[in-house]
Length: 240
Length: 221
Image (tube, helix red, strand yellow):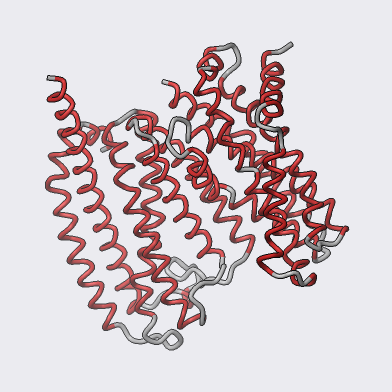
């Protein structure tokens, strides 16, 4: 699939249909997910605030998922020098930072009524915050180097270093402190698992976020390809 | 004499000769240590609780300071091109540069760390743990910081950019060192935190030269 899409013409032909397709899919899934979010019964402990979870948890999934996407795109652009892969890595960064920020903000809004505080230095909060700092560092590095191929490769090296480091960050903050909610979606014990009334909106919202990310990502890659083409044309025109 | 040893001597001579040696980093470290009680308040029991952690964090920040010139100087005057063309692999050159960074600023800072912690009110019994953490952690900071410096080559705003890139990478060693210090402070010995810090430092020393060399090659061609 990667080899097929590495050709810019084929990629543009594919994404011209895929981007709006994913967008429509995202709209349908998120609309359905929101409907289930607001009709789901109140939690016996969390009350109405449980509804924040359906916005928060998928954002946290996407924060990690988009980082993996960045890692794959960076790897492909560094090893195979695919132009599209570099554009994809560049386009991914603001989206990933956005989903990470959304996870942090919604988590904080949920934490205030539940834990009685906007922020605690718990393991998972801290590792997501460090992930957010990574995104900022990545974007800053890309923006600070003028030469575009050079900036792309330096940023790709940083992304791969971050990919190696993130599990270590995760482990180290676990070691440091943890009082977060235990795992419930894929929990092994049946009584700890999420009931269907909550699992359905969670799954719909997760898939919807995923489709939204796919759609926005493709749109941003297309914009980047166009921007580069425009730049080449401008240089040609200036050169006579 | 082996070319890498010559390079190490040259790096140390440059660090001592033109950069004022470890003085700027030490002065920064002393400045942060002085401003801290001014911000928190002088009560000894409040300061004593946070003293080891603050001494440790200020050390991490001080180790960022002189990174900007680590590759930039040689990059600007063309020496970096010669080093890339020369006999030893660029990975080894980068490792030597990071090592010289540790010898020139990390070691003096590590010696200053127990003094800073004692001034803030940490008990004397903690001084050895702080020294060991600072020595091992300083090595990790130098190698990971060197990676940030190599990535920022040829960019605008070098110094600030290095800090923004490197600080998230500092999270694990800061946690492990801080954990070792608080374990030691509560009488648990602190060996597990120290072991993790050593493991992280070993991984950083082993892996970051590869990424550093890749970043340098990228900046050079």
